[in-house]
Amino acid sequence: MATAAVRPDAPAITDRAGNLSFAQIAEAVEAAAAGLLGLGLGRGDRVVVWLPKRTENVIALYAAMHAGGIAVPANALLKAPQIAHILRDSEARVLVTTAARLADLNRELPDLAGVRRVVTVDDPVDAQVTQCATLGWPELLAAPPHARPPIIDVDLAAIFYTSGSTGKPKGVVLTHRNLVVGARSVSSYLRNTHEDRILAVLSFSFDYGFSQLTTAFAVGASVVLLDYLLPQEVMLTIERERITGLAAVPPIWIQLAELVWPEGARHTLRYITNSGGTMPQPTLAKLRQALPQTQVFLMYGLTEAFRSTYLPPEEVDRRPDSIGKAIPGAEILVLRPDGTPCAAGEPGELVHRGALVSLGYWNDPEGTAERFRPVSSSATGRPYPELAVWSGDVVRRDGEGFLYFIGRRDEMIKTSGYRVSPTEIEEEAYATGLVADAVAVGIPHQALGQGIILVATPAKGQADTESLVAKLKRRMPRYMVPLRVDWRPRLPLNANGKFDRAQLRRELLHMFSEPNCADSFVSE
Image 1 (cartoon, rainbow, N blue to C red):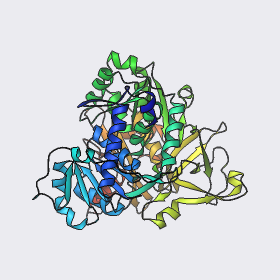
Image 2 (image 1 turned 30 degrees about the vertical axis):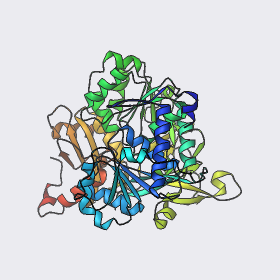
Image 3 (image 1 turned 90 degrees about the vertical axis):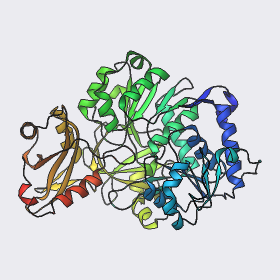
């Protein structure tokens, strides 16, 4: 890494085991890359890294890319069947994991003949536990130097597996150019410098989580790695490590907003960022009250284009529900189905063009052709068609060019002849003060087309359907009021920490397909 030559002794990564400088990280990446090449890793071969958030995770991912391979970060929370899918779909040649995780995966290994070698970062592996050829992390780092293949900016660098509304996760293919341009763009508008200390709480398998590494390393900032169980651990780490930047998704912010922020955190935290869903307005208000000196960046991104938009902190008071404008180096279009630009205020599909657009989906030409399509010269002003990523998200643009998220095209609820955004229902539910978490889902209804169900957790431990529905009736037109409130102690999250809408939809469809359930499909 270039930063190692400029600031070799500066701290690069901190985890529970200690600190590593940029020079130490660069040396380890070089050694691990040589080790991977010694294992026979070829140019473009995939390396799946299935590890907790620790320095070996970072080193293995960067080493895979440095060796000319393709890094495939896997969420540490996934179980063996999900990892087997990623290994099989990516046709991975090498797996980097722990001995315990490898033992869990053993039953799946006979169907994973393509995995040639497994590297374990901790305990040695019992030969009876696995049928794969294995070696330990120290052995990998002790390999002799190997000549690396040439690497240019359009070569493949990483595959991020992202879940859709249906089917198994699909891999989004990013180039070295995507990662470098994204890091420079994000670090520029966040005004990151080598003095920043960024807390990484999101999985590196999430492009938003991995961006914390690329953004920090682009400017020589430090990254503190944290796998946490309770939100209080995040607070304590911010204070102890004097964190200046924190990125999270709405479910995490909802939890953190309810806690008392320590004085140290209030003074060191320069900025926070939100992506992966709309920040509820009550949550945003609580965070801003607790962190009056902290800048808030409301962002939007899709894995297929890494990052897309951000709202400058100075605009949050004026338009707290906006996702802002395009990040530096990108253009965001709002287009009709026929590809023509929408007028101001007219809902349309968000389309991203520029150097951040990925190459498509791994091993999925049909899915790639559906999502990565040309935009016309009438939309771009260029005399030739250009490939862009069509997000599937419905947004609108105001007269000043600021964008507002309406909902996923495949999640919009069609009820009583109206198209309703689940986000709008959720925002109104949060505004009542009676719910802590909320997800609105539409399921088939004989009379309405789709009926709206609000799945929620109570704000203060007390579920009060009557009061909630009464308040929603005062705040929304009748067709938007949920027909039923499904109270739960907690809502399911997907691997990236977002509310798992697909799982909730499946559960509700099953629930209301049971005999006599139709009779209960009314507000309680």
